[in-house]
Image (tube, rainbow, N blue to C red):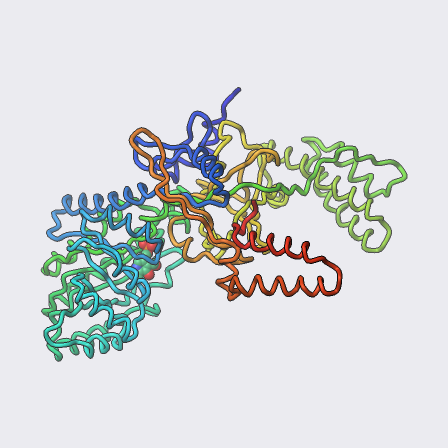
Length: 628
Ligand code: PLP
C-alpha cells in the first residue's frame, strides 16, 4: 500500500508548529517526543486508557514537556547572559493563573529548582495555593493583582514563612495597606510597583499595555510612591519594578520598545538613589500555534532565544547608557511553558454531509422542471461548463425554494432538488479545484460543502480560547496518517450551541476553513488530537450544557520508550457537575423519586418499575457526562 506519510506531515504542518515534541511514526500514528530520544505513540495511550474505562474526551498531559520548556527558557537566558556579559541573574517565576493544576505547578517548580524558578500569583486564592507548595529557597514569590487588606496581610504571612515575597502594588491604595500593616521587628515583604508603560504589546492582548491600561501606576503615581516610602523610612524595601504588556506578543519589535521604556524607568528610579534590584518584564513570550513564524495572532515572529537576547541586551544597553547597575531580570512566562505539554483527544461520533449520496434517485419528465434542470446540471457538468453551471444551479436553488414556499412543490420534490443541487455543487467544486486558478467564488462553496464531523467534546470546556478570542490550536488525526485524508471537514462539538464548532484551522500561509480528514466509518473509532492546549484552557473552560472537566492522564515516557501513567484522573461525574449548580445529590434523587411517586399513585407506573428507574438515575449520576 502506498503510504501518504510525507504528504500528511505537510498537510498538518507538524514540523512547523511541533517544536520537536511531535512526529508521526512509520505506522501512521501521532508520536509524542518529550525529549529528543524518547517517543510514544498517542494511539497506544488512548487504546490503553479505553481498556481501563477512561473514555474520550481525554486530556493527555506530558509533564516531561513542561520540564523541557522550563529548562529551555532558563538555558536561553543563561546563553544570553553569558553572550552579552550581563552581570546579574535571571530569576523566572511561573504565573500560576496560566494553568493552576497542582501537578502542573509542582512539575514546573521541580524542573525549575536548580534555576531558582519561582511563582507569580494574581489573587489571594492563588497565593494560598502557592503557600502550600515547596519552593526553592532562592526563588521568588511575586504577588500581583488587585489587593485588599486581607490579600496584603497574606504577603506579611508569606514573609514570616521565609518566602522571598515581593508584593507588587498596582495602586497607591495598595501601598497604603502595606505601610499600615507594618509591625516593628517583624518580617516585611519586599515592595514592587507595576508601572504603566506608554508602549503596548501586539496581538489579542495589547489592551493590557499603554497609558490607558487598567493596570499599574502612572509616572506621577510612581514618584508619589517614592516620596511616601522615603518619608516613612521604607524606601529600602522598594526592590522591584514590573510591567506586563499582554500575553502572546506576536511582534518582537513591540516587546523591544516596551523593554527599552521599562529599562529607562528602572534606570531613572535607580539614579534617584532607590536601590531597585529586580526588573520584572512580565509575561507575553508567545507560542507559535500555527507554525508560520509570523506576527499573526496565533504565531510569533521570533524565537525564545531571540526573546531572551533582546530582553538581556536591551536592559544592559540602557543601564550602560545611564551608568546604573544592571538589575536581576524576572519574567512571568506562562503560555510558553505550559502550552505544548497538553492535548485533548476526542472521537468523531457522526459525520454530517449536506451533499449526501444521490443513490437510487430517479427523475422523470413528470417531475417539476426545476428538479429536472438540477438533475441535468448534476449529470452533465464538466471541466468546461462548471462555472456557468454553478451560476445556473444557484438560480435554480432559489427557484426551488420560491416554488416550495408558494405551495407548488411537494416535500419530496424539494428534497430531491436539494440533493441534486448539493451533489451538482460537489462535482462543480471538483472541477474548480483542478482548474489552473481556483476562482474566489468557489471559496464559499468549499466551506459550505465541508463535512461536519461531530466530535465528543465541548469547545467551551476544552478549547474556550478558540471560541472567545479565536486562538487556533493544531488539530489532526492521531492515527491513519499513512492514509490520504480525502474529506474536507469542520468540527462540531456535542453542545447544543451553534458556536460549539471549529471551522478555522492552522495553516502555514493562511487560515484554513476546513481540515483534511479521513472518511469516517461509524463502526471504527476515529480519534482527533487538539494539541497545545496547556495554557489557559483548563481554567477558562466552562460547563456549558453541563459537560464537565474531561478525563485526564499524566503520561511519562521512560528511557526505553515505554509510557507510564503517573496519574489517571477521572473527569467530572454528572452528579458532581449538577452539584456545582446547586443540585445537591440528595435533592436530585429525592426530587426524581417524588416525581415518579406521582405516576405510581396515579397508577401509571408500578413500584418495581419506579425503583428500577431510580436505580438507573442514581447510577448515571456517577457517570461521565460526555457521550459513551
Ligand atoms: N504576568 C501577568 C501580570 C499577566 O497578566 C500574564 C497574563 O496575561 C502573565 C504574566 C502571563 O503571560 P504569558 O502567559 O503570556 O506568559
